[in-house]
Length: 216
Image (cartoon, rainbow, N blue to C red):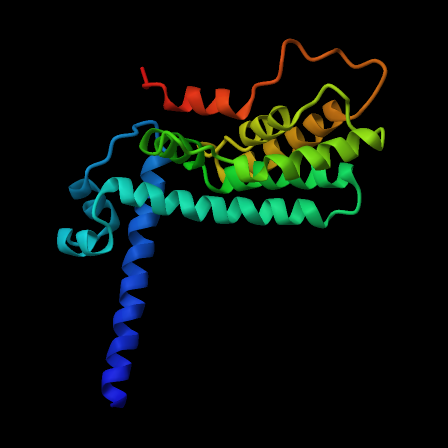
């Protein structure tokens, strides 16, 4: 009985280990410019056999879905942290810093989001958080801390861009992103001498339509 239980535990550990190995290899690949990946290439990059790969994932699309689920879980922690902040402005700071650092640590995220938009056209990334983020932004504006012409997607999209330096050495990108976060947050502060933001803010549905457009 004990031997059987130990064997089951060992099998579960191996399943999780190989699954994590496959996801890590796929994420490293998607952090590059080339968006195409075959199952045989993924098996080679992950250091597993084709049979093992197919036991864990039926297709590359399933790998993308798993990576997307991992990302959304991590982004949820950023939202949760934002909601714990006492003031609206502190919530904005937590949101910007959290998204920028998440993207910095996971440079494949923008490409994974785009792949998911192609796989699931009805998906609206971040839609579940729109109301929460908008409420924090409104509170920060009511406090007189956040410029009144800034909207949720202005802040979220810019924060993603702040962390998009995965191609740089660790020490350099940490220094660059830390400074850019401060510069960006200062630009969000309310003030009579601020240059008005041009045009209208981009909406979530518009962003999704761009993500679904064929790559050229």
